[in-house]
Image (cartoon, rainbow, N blue to C red; front, top):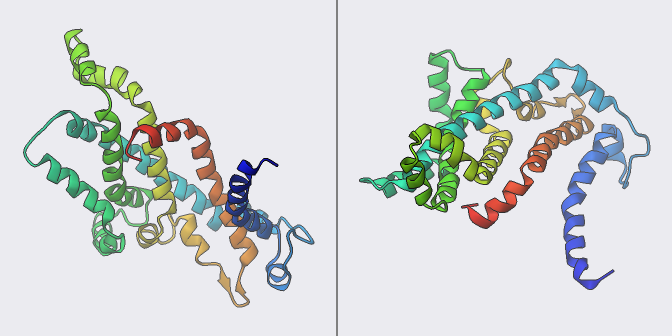
Length: 265
């Protein structure tokens, strides 16, 4: 093997080893996981996956998570697009301070907002709904989306806007048909990060739901029984939670590369 490939190969092996170990454990019973240390299962079992796909508590958790993550991603990007355009193209009193204030919401820990959100959504009958979690995650994802998109939009020359205006394009027609396709890479990167941050967030998702809209991350924290934690079941659930993120990365992989090169990523 060429020496220049040694370091990348070692890095990839170290990166993939925990994922392989998780997948391996998902095909094992808890007793085998605790009793042996092996590179592969001695007896492969699909019971963990069968339970997840047949137990409503488990598969509804995945459905709930995908629902509020999808809603949040759409709302965050839709709200951030015009806001980022305003920060990119116009100068107004307090624009820098407002932009910084948006970012401070992303810096705040979710625990600060858990109780206010809980009381508010309980009062308006939004508690234990996917919409409650989706709206709560907007507090963090919209500032992030504005920050990323503003970087992409600032890289587009203002002459494009002026040329469209001279050609008689109404603003929204220009914005939808010309400007948004121009920053498609930025939108792809933004959707990726909004999806991932909302998918892995646990505190608000767990606080704002109880039964009907409980996400998969909250379900995974309740696998204790009289005999201990069901490690094989947890491993199978963890393996399945990787799949949505892998699909998102696959479809926006080209945009992510452009985002690291051109945007604020």
